[in-house]
Image (cartoon, rainbow, N blue to C red; front, side, top):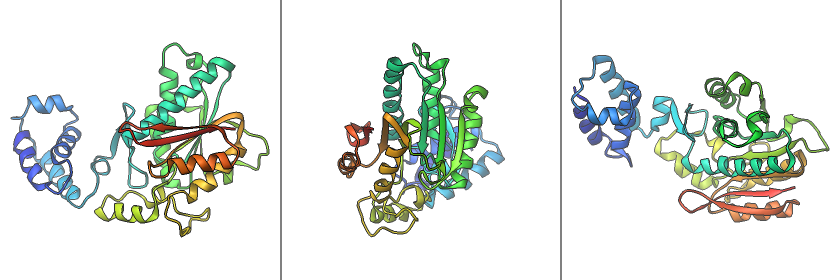
Length: 308
């Protein structure tokens, strides 16, 4: 079977997918370890038996609703290839603005203070936010940050998620960069000590923020993303909060983050377009000043930040 024949048949089988042609292309790229251009100009290339077997098994999995990223085990984010498993949320393009907004603040603040930053990535999941931020800061021309790399504390309640984050750090970071990372299994800031003085210059987080009802609806399509990483309507001990605004966990995260920030430090969160303004209100109520809302790639409210 040629690449073109596989793609045409796959598109028909994947008619229930919102992106059948893209799904087929990504699966072909993965099994061939080639880019889309290669596939486009080699449509008559014959697949071998092993490749065909893998591809049809992959199509069967995709037909159940399983995301392509979980089938291939990889997802591109911020220009880097991250390993993903069903233990972590699949990195989304809109989350890239969280990295960009955090980097802008760090670079501006570094220029003013010339210090090494201490950064916490709370609810890190695959590690895509913290790792991308480190790579961006260390590779950006014109910043002294290249010579004074920040320290990162990568936190998640899930040991399985932290294992994925560690694997991505090993794969994507240099030895010098990797030495700046520590990984902590913790329920929010619970295992980071009982400090009365702030220890972080910036806390970045893409926490669970989807309302409970919407989370249930999202997971009915077989996508297999962890509810733990989506449902924001849980108490600090992981029980249903009884609310349906996606902010129960964030109501705990914000005041804890305030305590762990240095004076003048920043908290920046990803949240939903439906609750970003409410999250900003909570920040103000908990003592944050100079709060700000940011938009994502589609023009929807996505990030909120505040200064201690």
